[in-house]
Image (cartoon, rainbow, N blue to C red; front, side, top):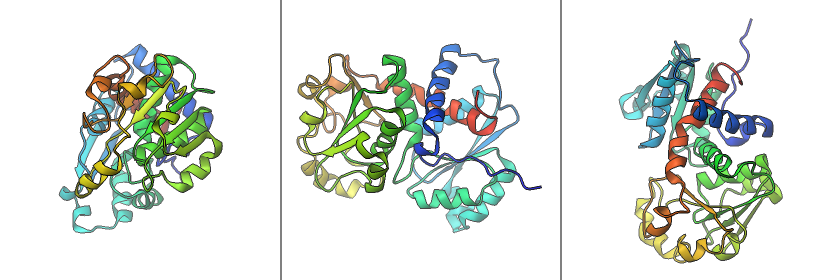
Length: 304
C-alpha cells in the first residue's frame, strides 16, 4: 500500500488560511510555554541542504530540532554529491529514506519543486529566489504577539520586491490584511504572486504613500546574496527608499519596524530606526526558531 503524499512547504500559500493562522498561533504558544520536556521529534532527523550562506536559518532549525528531541544534519552542497551534479531526484529519494523532513536553501524555486516531487517526506523552503516562507512565518508571529490579529490592518513593504516581499504578499491574502509595496521601477515583486493575492497587495513607487496607516513597516537589503555585482547600480536605483525616522512618522502611531537581517545600516534602513523604539527585529529573529518548530511539528507529527 502506497504511503500518502507528504505535505511540502515551498511557499506560504502551501498552507490554507486556517492552517497558516494555526501555525502562527502554535508558534506563539510554544514560545510562551517554553516546555523543554515536550519532545515530539525524538528519533526524527532533519536534512538541511545549504547552497547559500546562513546564520539565522541554520541555527534556528538546528536549535528547534534539538529542543524537540530530534537532530539536524547539515549538508552544504559543496560537501555532498549534489556538488558533483548528482540529480536532485536521486538526492531526494535517498535523503527521504534517512530523514523525516528535508530543508533546502538555494537559488531556485524550480529545483525545490523537483526535490519535492521525488521526496517521501516533507520538503521545506528555507529560502529560494522566489519565496522565503519560514522568515515570514516568524514575522507574522512577531506581529501577532505584539498587536494581535492581523485581519483588516495594513503593512508596508519598502524596497526590493524580492523573495521575502513575495512571501509577505501571500501572507496578506492568507491573513486578511492589506500590504502596500513601494519599490523602484524594475524591482517589482513576482507578477504571479501579486495576481494570486489580488487586492490584498498593492504595488507602487511612493514610500510615503505606502506607509500611511501601516502598523508594520518592513524592508530588506537592496542587494541580496548573489547580486553583489549590482551593488552600485542598486544604490542609485533605491535612492529615496530608505526607511528612516521621517518615513516612520508617516506610519501609524507606534508602528513596528521589521527586517529579516542581515541589515545594511545607512542603506535600506537608518541606524536610528533599526536600533530604535520601533524596531522588533531581535524578537523577529528569535521567532525564527519558534515558527519553524511549529512548522516541523505540523509537517512531521501533525497539527496540535
